[in-house]
Structure formats: C-alpha cells, structure tokens
Image 1 (cartoon, rainbow, N blue to C red):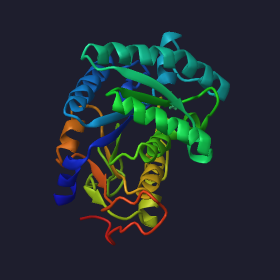
Image 2: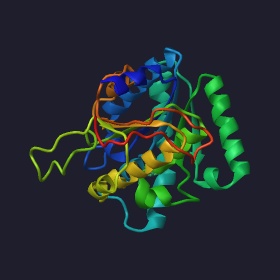
Image 3: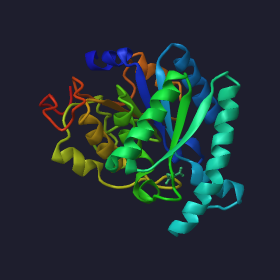
Image 4: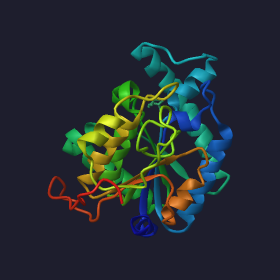
Length: 282
Ligand code: GLU
C-alpha cells in the first residue's frame, strides 16, 4: 500500500513500548523481548536513522524486584515502585544496547515540556544533542513529580509530545494489540485490522474508548490521543504488536504491519489545516 511505503523515507523515529509489551501478564520482565528490541533498534540506528525510545515498565520492574504479584493500588506506592524500577530498567537497557555497541541515555520528562517554554527548550536541546552524538535517548515519565502516565497513559501521550518536540517523522506505538480493529476482536470474530486511518472520526473515538489491563495503563483511547497530538505536527503514527520487535524493521521498510495513522504533509507550525483525507480507511 502506497501510504505504508512512504514510511521507508522516515529518518527520525520515536518508538514507544508499553509495560504490557515489556512484561509477561504476571508482571515479570520479558528479557528476551528487551534483547530483541535493543538488537532491532541498534541495527536501525546503524543505518543512519535516528531513534528515540520511550519506554514504560519502571513500575513493573520495581514490583518484580520487590517480589510483588501486582502493582499497588495507591499512587504513591506506584511512584515508589517506579523510582525503584527505573534505575533497574535503564541498567538492563544499557547492558543490552552496549552489547551491540550502542550508547543510550536516560531522559525523564513530564508534560512540562508542552506547557513551559524554558523546559521545552532545554528538553529539545538535550534530545537534539544526544541524537547528534548518535546516542539513543530512552525516555520515561518522571513518575516522582508527575502522575499523568501512571494514571491513564502508559506513556502514549508523552511519546507523542516527544515526537513533536524532536521533530520526528514517525511515532511507532508498540502494544499487545495488532492495530486498530474494525470492531472489538474479543467479541466479533470477523473484526479486521484497519490498515490505514486518515481521519479521526467520532465513531473511531467511540470504538477506541476503554483502557488496557494488567500491568499496563494505556489503551486505545490514549493511543488515539497520541495520534491527535502527532497530527498537529504532521507526524505519522503506527500502532503495531510489539510481541516481536522485528516488526519495527518491517514498518520502516514500508511494509504493512498494523494500523498507520496517515497524514500527508508535515506542518511544524501545527494547529492549522492538516490536509487529512476525508476517508476512514483506504
Ligand atoms: N512511567 C510508568 C512506568 O514506566 C508508566 C506506565 C505505567 O503505568 O506502567 O512504569
């Protein structure tokens, strides 16, 4: 499909992995998947493309370290686990990336990067400098000072703000679902993945309502919100299944691998006409 093929020209890509992608349903970290993720991203970076990784999983790793079977219900408990788990999560990433001779950096952000111009400028300068140095920034929300993503985002919206800040061409949201379906696949056996979405309609928003489960906190609703943020800057978004991180290579080779939220041109000024085609699917 032509629109998918355009992804082969993307040079700056934000990849977001959610907690459900990085861990088993019991919350334990899926090391094999992390190894494959590091492998895939390091190889892509070698081709000259720039990668930013937005990773959740701090709470899950923290829970694993303390031997907890589930995440705590209270916010402060989650924040404490995130503080415990984030250090470990980055240690693991660093080990796996360094084995592939790829340096990484930890960047903890909050939505202040949207609201406060000074923080936005600082975050932007840091990201651009890291990318110039050929380093992969690994971003998470700073869960000690903000709780947006712990409460309902699983970093979906944060990753969209990062894509916008970094002037990325593409945001890939990896999840435990294959993409956006025409109906709830758990209830309708004939539900099909929608390969391309050109317009966020009210119907689409309605069908995306509802949150995720288990250790993750995102859902289709926060992903659609991420799409909306990206559209303001002309950034394409793909929602795909992260069970096999090799899927990232397929996506950036322009091969259909989930749902592509397409917008046809980049408007960095944002918030103007977005030239969105007037059909739901193509
Ligand atoms: N920053 C949190 C984490 O990394 C966010 C996502 C979540 O709720 O799992 O764990």
